[in-house]
Length: 284
Image (cartoon, rainbow, N blue to C red; front, side, top):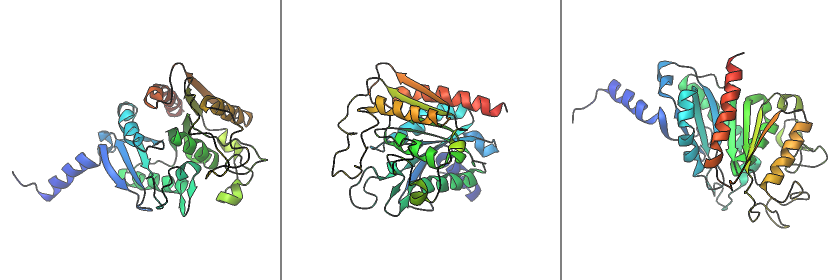
């Protein structure tokens, strides 16, 4: 085999690992946490891109599903896809759900995502000071809580079938409400900023199993009011939509007929929403 010159080898490696469907990268800020991307090859020629951050569910494998599932959307809409990967057992205690609530031990997952976005923006010479976020199931947990805490960073948010929701209730503490948001995260709730974010919510009308989402006394995330938003995912997402709308947020709600807890079957609705927001955003 003919040996490649150093410049040619670097260029080929970048084409294989840094563009299109990328390798898995560790975060420079916290190498315990990882990310995988889809970056349209046109970015190598300096084309400017928007960014979608797509957050996995409890099984984590949806990070790859989302990277690949949004690849065509990204190519034809000039949009990179960044999928964080937050491993199970990251603190050695077997926990699966810490990222859903933004904080776990010494990890602030919201801050890690912001650092990932900044790191990749520098790598690909992009301005991603604003980005969109989508998450399904556990990722839906993360996405709506990230939007509550960092609305000024988002040009859109799509929230898919979270098992539990944080309502914008100033009389209850996190994670059920937002009363102690500033004490907990050092940042006050900004309803005026959240009202500027186009928000999409999506859930299958057959997504009715409750075994994984019913909080019981003694559970890691049990607190008073943990189950008050509704018995199942559609009911809880409806409660979240009502809470957001009462705060002045424009919410597009898709309740998909005949679909259970299936992330792939809702992606078309997410893409339609994001395409519309991108078109409006770019026409200004």
